[in-house]
Amino acid sequence: MLARNSDLKGAIHAITSLEEQWNKWYNYPIVFLNNEKWDKKFIDALSAISSGKAVFETIPESMWSWPKDSAGSDLMDRTRAQAAWEKMKANGIPYATKESYHHMCRFYSGFFQDHPAVAPYKYYWRIEPDVKFTCRIPYDPFRAMRRKNKIYGYTVALWEIGSACPSFFRAMADFKEAHRIRSTSLWTSIMEPSWAPLPIRKFFMSMSSLFHSRDRHGDSWNHCHFWSNFEIADFDFFRSDRYRELFRELDASGGFFMERWGDAPMHSLALALLADPRQVHYFEDIGYQHPPFQHCPSSNVGCDCDCSGKDLEELRGAQRQTDKRHSAETGTIWILDCV
Ligand code: GDP
Ligand code: MN
Image (cartoon, rainbow, N blue to C red; front, side):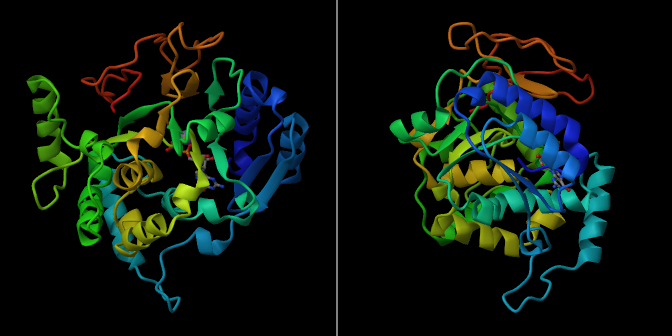
């Protein structure tokens, strides 16, 4: 879990829920990371409720900063980046002007897998403050991943705000072409869905004319991504030479700061590009709330679920709403599963 000292209450909620629904039977260690020094209060409170070992570490500045060239000089003009943030803010993009949010996204995109505190581990489960696990999880997802040869697991997939990352898909596609990487079927499924009925295709096309950058062949991304605040994954994927190379090239382009490239699209498109789709697993049975969205397993897959919750509509069951989109205007809440 990456968190701030001020996330104390939310961190307690999330870990209490994780322990209650799962970890009290498994006692896995929990690593807490922060870009600042941890308060004793946070350490004491979270140690007390973790059934396994709890580790509290700080993130080195090299992993939480602006991109630099190999000589250590700044690659970016911060004034220009800040001007770009103001424009994004005027367009209603959340967090655009928050420098720490850009550092957070860049950390999860390029560095979390190399933090010394996680060096001993092959698999991880990302937890955030204020999330809730709404069903019992009576098995070990890490063992399930290993047994089924999976490298990435998700519970919610939804749409990124296109205007937060207008040049992201083009940057990805350029990498794909420069390195002559062959398409996987996951790559195809996250582009405009040629399989979809016409009204849905039209919807995607109208969205794409607004926000999409296209590759040189005119294809574009439908903005679908795995919602990475939940992920159970194999560190090896993110520690691979190819992934590192991809991050390095994207980072050097400045998009994590000039735009608001998030770690969710980064992880998702990297998987689409570099992974075998059969190695991606939908944890359909794991009930998960990260307000305002949740995934609530239908009764035949979830174990003892209680999906009620503050700030959430109860949407038990309804899983596939590919043609619906979260509407900021009406505040409608959907369970989204867009892949
Ligand atoms: P959202 O889910 O996109 O709204 O973003 P969050 O505010 O939940 O942030 C994502 C994750 O990064 C959470 O685990 C936060 O606790 C963590 N996080 C965000 N900003 C900071 C920061 O400045 N410092 C630290 N230590 N953690 C942060
Ligand atoms: Mn969050």
